[in-house]
Amino acid sequence: MNRFSDFFILFWTARITLGTNESADQRTGGLPTEPYWPAPCTLGGPFAENPMANGHLKVAVVDDDPSVRKALCRLLGLLSVDAVAFASGTEFLENLPHHRPDCLFLDLRMPKMNGFDVLEQLARSQSPVKTIVMSAQDEASSGKACLLAGAIAYLTKPLDEQSLLAAIHKATGSMPT
Image (cartoon, rainbow, N blue to C red; front, side):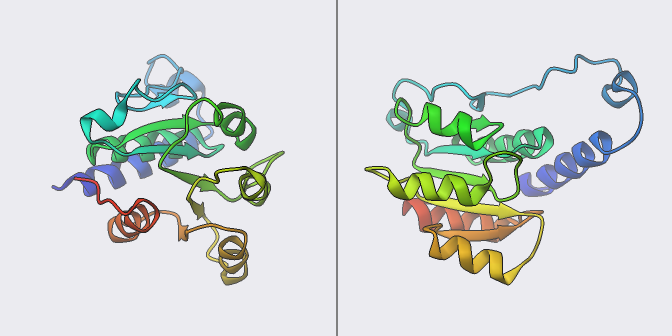
């Protein structure tokens, strides 16, 4: 089994588990309910002091769904990408002046500040971040609007390996190993 197959098993297991009506203890099998963020992915924290010294790309992941954040960070880690996860656009934008990623994976549909709002804020900034928008809805009008708002790519969830790698390459000019 390849690493992307492992990601899909992880992704769909997390989605199915978190989407049930079972109690928290049943969903987690008695494990702690705090999210587990394997290195190199961190939750809303800084990137490594000098992550490019190790040749890794720096990617931010913004999604209100913890299972998506966790699964995408794990996949990026398998690709030797340093990832930092944020639960909201506001949280990401507050952290941006201190830690600038090479690119951003941004969920389109989020409460309070949606992906369009984040794109608008990034467009107004002095040095915008190259952004890859993700959405569970495959809407041509949303994709076109995101690209017009400055996104590099629009991907439909669940993400497939070729689209993910092509979007990272388009945004950064580099290919994860």
